[in-house]
Length: 78
Image 1 (tube, rainbow, N blue to C red):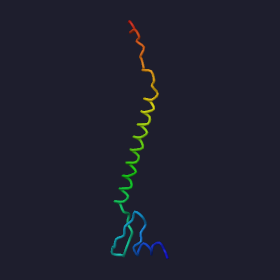
Image 2 (cartoon, helix red, strand yellow):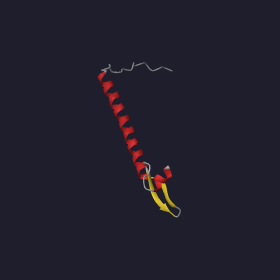
Image 3 (cartoon, rainbow, N blue to C red):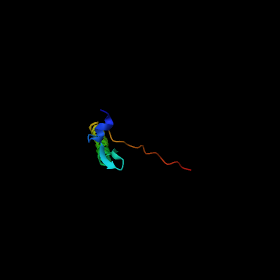
Image 4 (spheres, rainbow, N blue to C red):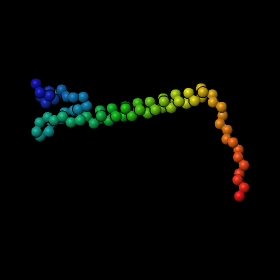
């Protein structure tokens, strides 16, 4: 049994839907499913970056580094 036959009788690949046109049944991408998959991946990426930033800030605060001081210099007299 060919993959084309399976698609024609209703079983479709993930992310695809079927519809009828003048020549019969054809498979089209499920844009809504693809959009939600992309949106979920974007949310996960943002969360990953925020978590990394939080960990870096916590490590910096835990290091208890001495405060930065700028040396005061005399202005150059022209």
